Length: 307
Length: 311
Image (tube, rainbow over all chains, first blue to last red; front, side, top):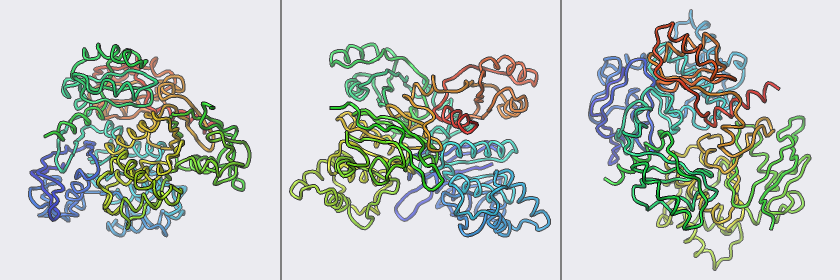
């Protein structure tokens, strides 16, 4: 559905996206993740034709973005981070406005908007001013507006930032419905638990794609070259500091009373209990647990940083 | 000294007919990071404002660092730091100027200010950035400056209201390491958030919904004792088709797609695995693996909130 070939985007001296090559399959839910400034938003903007690449080629549905941007706009629904809803218009007035923008045929408009309201669970709020909607409802309205022209590709830039857990789950239920209708979805997100919901995930860092695969492949222990070990301790910080510099420890972090350690192999943990004991730190015996995406990314980013 | 840094009993706040906080009782131990989790409008910020003595409770009582939140609010405010949701840093001022401004507000003695600034900025990793204008700082650095400003007077208790909204995962990790350092030195911390991965970092936490606490415990306890129902993970080919089939069969309360995996949640999800396998098999879908997994905090939260809104 999307093909990026050596995409580079520069702003003056800043290279926001550097030589990015990536394919997104039709019908796929693809996640773009990475810290702020990694190049996620710029990548989405170039795909959406809002911006031209400095170098490289981008095509959507087989059409080159620079040759026929209008054809691509018809294929794409784009929900930027700050979506321009009109706060002084009601829900239905906002949708009517976007129906005008996208040139939705008048004859089908009522039915189309009714279906979008129903889809976004906003039918009973249609006369409410957009500014009086909760954050989660505003996001759902923005999503409905982005779907007005029945796009085959949906680009979402951090759509759940600042949204509470219940609204977030509802939003993902809506995305699953869209996915099941065959729409390709590319979602940029700062949340790694959302990345777990994508079929494939691309990790961007400093404008480059440093890993790209299915979540369960990315966090595969053999692939990341590390095992994850957990121990419980009321003094998790002290326990971390005690073993941080021991051989084979790649990273260690405390989470409440849980110490989480990435090590090159599980046997490294056999010496830790004596290290803790010597310092008077009570901790449970470390046991191996399943790696999370976050573990994999911490490792990849730290390797990348060293180069 | 009392080992509790904070305690409330039936803390309640009404606004006209709206009950924002409804008989909330919880406590925070010294050196503990306690998380208050809930959707927008659940009562988190109202609770914090009462604890800071900014808002009088309608009923109930509370104490912070042993001081009564109604009668001794002034004592509390001198000893606590507060990073609010929209913490006001001055974008046109530099890092150093912002810090000094808050030092003045909190009454840090003038001769101690330079030394305090050097130490606190070093602590939050902003040493060397003193002449930078705040408008040029990245989100994560701003957040750490906001934290530094709340630490100017070396508070014993720190309130953080949604401190990491819009901050990327690596910066969030840095911020949390700072909070752990503070806690290890004895600072008690109350943090509100609606990010579940952040909640995992707290020593203990409470879910708050419609002004009430609906569950409380350590993150591990939440996933075991406080979970309603079970979560099963199914790995199979054609996950989309499997999702549709499982939803249509209504074996589980909730069926969701996680990449190429399926998560199903229900009261006796484990017992439904056999019929689920049979169903998928009948549709020609091969199941590679299926079993019970630990719920995420978000799973627990949503299950608890659904139950709370039913009653």
